Structures are given as C-alpha cells and as structure tokens.
Length: 633
Image 1 (tube, one colour):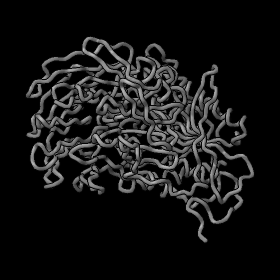
Image 2: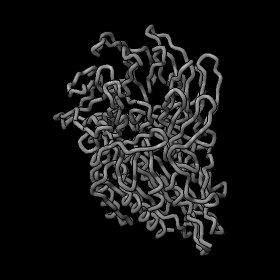
Image 3: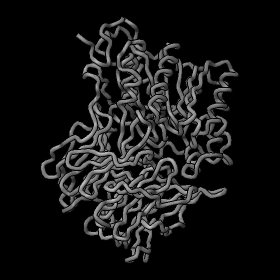
Image 4: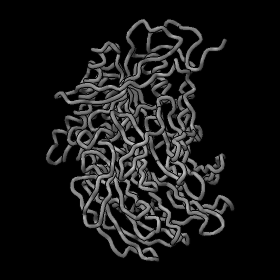
C-alpha cells in the first residue's frame, strides 16, 4: 500500500519542524498556477494564466468546452504600469471584420500588440520603447484601444490616458493628473469614466472619479469631476441604462454607489464590508452591474470572501458559490456569472455560475493534491494587540497524517507584502509545505491590512514598523497562551513590505525568534523613498512620515541603521532585476549583519524582478529556507 501524497509512509518520530513529507517544494510550486483579467467577449471567455513551470503569463480562450492558448509563441502577457500592472489585454469582437482581434501588452517590451487568433496575424500598435501600457479597454466602434500610458522620460515619469488606434495612431485623452486608473466605456460608447489622483495621495487614500462625454470620433466633449471628499473611488462602470456606478469608501467601506452629474449619490444595497481590495493593479472587477437591476457583489467579512446576486431596488440577495472564500475578476455573458475564486482546498479556479439557477461549474483549477487528512485548514484568528485594538489573521496547525504530535509545534509567522494588502483563507501551497513538516503557521492581517474597512486600513498611516510589529508580537503571545505553539521556537518570514515587518520584528523582539527570512524585503525606508518608482513615491511618507519633519522615525525604524540590535539568524532572497526594492538594500543588510557576527545567508537570482516567478527559483527558496530554519530549531 502506497503512502498518500503529502505524508511519509511511516512516522519517523521526529519532532515537529522535522517531519518527513512527500509533498515537496517543487510540488508546492507546481500547484500554484493563477489566473487574472477574466472577461467575456465575442462569445468566449478569456483570461491570463500564470504558469510557474514556464515562468510566464499567457492569454487563454475558453469556447464550447475547450480552452486554447492565444498568445503567439515567444510572447507573454503582462503589464508593468505602476510596476504592478493589470489590464494587460482587451478583446475587439468580430464586428470589425470576420474575426475578433486581441490587443495585449507584451511582457518584454511593454508595447501593445494586435493579434488575430483565427489568422495568426500579429502586429505592433505602439512603438515607443520608453512607454508602457496597462488598463486596456476596447473601443471597437472607433477601432481603438484605451489605455493608461506610462512614459519614462529623462528625469521624470508621466502618466496619461490615451487612445491607440488599430492603425497605430495615438490620441491623448487626459494628462493633467499624476495618475490614471481603470478607464471604462459605457455600452454605447458615448460616456467614459476613469479614476485619477495627484501626489501625495495614494490610490486607496483619496482619488477622483471622472466622467466624460465623447463625440462620434471619440474626442472628449464634456468632462467633470464627480463630487467627493476624503474618499477613494475604484472600479467605475456603467449599467445598461448608462448610469455611472462606482465603489467608494465614503461610508467607511468600499461599497457600490450610483453617482449623478449633479453630485447626488445613492448607495446601492450591499453589506457594510469592503467589496474590493486596495487597487494596486488595474482591471480588477470584484463587482458587476447585470441586467434587470441585478448586481453581482463580492465582499469580505472577517477575512472571508462572499459572493451574491443583489437586486438594486428590492435588495433581494442570492448567495452563490458556497465553500469558496475569495472572489476576483467577475464578468458575465448575460447567461452566467464567471469569476476567479479560491477556497481552503483550491488556490485558484475559474467558475461558471448560472444566473438563473445558481448552478456552479468549475472550468479551470484543481483541488489540492493533498488528502483531507493532510490538509491544514485556516482558522480565523481574532486577538487583542497594543492598546486593546483588535488584529486579524489565520492560524494553520501542523497537519501530517503519518505523524503523531507529542509536543507543541514551532511557529512560522507570515507577514504579507504591501503593506496595504491582505492574506486570505485560501489554499496556499507554501503554507501546506510548512504544516506538512510540523510547523504551525500564522498568516497575519495586521492593522493596516485591507478587507476590514477604511479605518483599519488607515491604521498603518504613520505607524509602519510599529503597529504591524506590535501585531506580530501580540499574535505570538496570544497563540502561546492558547497552547497552540511552542513560544520558544518561533520563526518569521516576509516578502517586500512583509520583509520590512519581519526585520523590524527582530529588533522589537530580539529574544523572540529563532530565525527569519526576508524575500526582497525593505531594509532601509529612507533608501527606498529615494529610489522608488513614482506610484509609491509618497507611500513611505504616508507610512512613516516626512523625513524632514520626522527624521528620528527613519533612524528608529530602519533595520539597516538598527542592524546592531538584530541577533537573530536571517536568510535573504533577492532578485537582481528588482526595480521596487533595489538589490543594494539587501546587500547592505547582509553585510551589516555579517559584520556584527550574526549568522546570515544570501541567495540572489540574476533574472528575477520584484516577486519571483520561475519555478526553479521558487522551489529553491522553500528548500533553502527550510534547511536554514531547521539549523536553528
């Protein structure tokens, strides 16, 4: 009889943290395919599929029960506008001719290409190598594509809203703001909406909703700013009657509103909960206006996602997709609702939900290969932090059916990036890799995370490196008091902003951790502030303060400056093409710890950017991280 995948055939009586498992790092990485930019067009379903085994992103089409790769060989679909991309393709249906065409942003040169899947014809629409594009929106009536354009010019970066004709022509629609996001056309093509904002505001702190009228050739004839205050708009769209709708957090949560030109606004029926994450990327649809005054809404309650149909007039609600706990990229063909969803057993799936019956069909994505007895399930964590404030997270106990635990497990703390982001109670094979080996894992949504309302999200303003760290240490204390972990064997890891929280936690709790891992993590906020890209140029000031008026904070909260206070062994992972956290930060931090006699190890990848994508590298990270932790168990 063979052992189930994910366990060893026989318990080896090893302590937690050293359990044997057949669920390898390579398997954990291979099972981590993801999808984005889901849309319905030309009688088919389209999406971008990230393939870890190849390290690329390809455009896929689903029609009549069959899926087909659309991206031409040698091309990958990915936008790098604002460095985080999104909205990397749009479909121009066959009304332009006998065949539909797809406009996509090619990953290598960031240019827009026009591709006809039927004839395999491919040509470049944009030809300026200093420009990038994202947030693509089809304007088939005018034979053009709307996009956010990012121009990298000598000494500056400019953003504009542009229209790129299928003949290669270019028209600037708006260029007065610092940033643009999410252009959307009404069905008849006579109205255009978008989000814009100026520095020092951020896309989740304060933005403007713009509404414009277009003439027949597509020029803007009228334009107005929808009245708003200290609020952040996102995901504008038009219903079938041409009414402008948008999410805004003026009520304390991102919920849908109907907005009129005279400034009047009507909140649409919805729960008092966030109906979207922070808009780091373009093209994300977490809600949708349907026919006959129905809305498709997804929202987060206590960290768990929900999906429902809601009638805009009667408030009738029909819950959908039970068992799933995260929903993204909603779209509809009029007969069915489609979305990218995830659950504690499935990291990503494409679902079809019949609008009439609610019947669900999974079109793409598989459940975990781990048997139920080997799968660690998320448990909601609600605990008190500094000042009696509440913090959130998810706890995963160790799980391996071939092992018989005889002692409290070591704990591995996950600190998510962003930091204005979140973790979710869905299958993460990295977490299963650790719980299979006897580690308990706590995945934290420290104060400042998204999904819990504006006030919780804003809590990190001025408090980065303090508030998040307080929540890390309080979570460890809470789990220790509950008897869930061995508080003397705690490890911590984080990527990007999470790497900063990780390093700051080593300073605040010098005797708390056995070892740590920083994946392309921030080591010195002041250096990051000096070289970071435009989209985040004011983010550090928002998170910590103006260094001209708050210089002491940058000394106290710099892991590099405070490196002599770190005594915990650390392993670093860094991509050498990272444009967000430059490799020099990691190099300086490694040198400082090494000079202080702290055990340190550094792993670099010459061809990785901010966030690793190649399967071999992702596998290596898990394997080396495990070996490093086990050396300090």
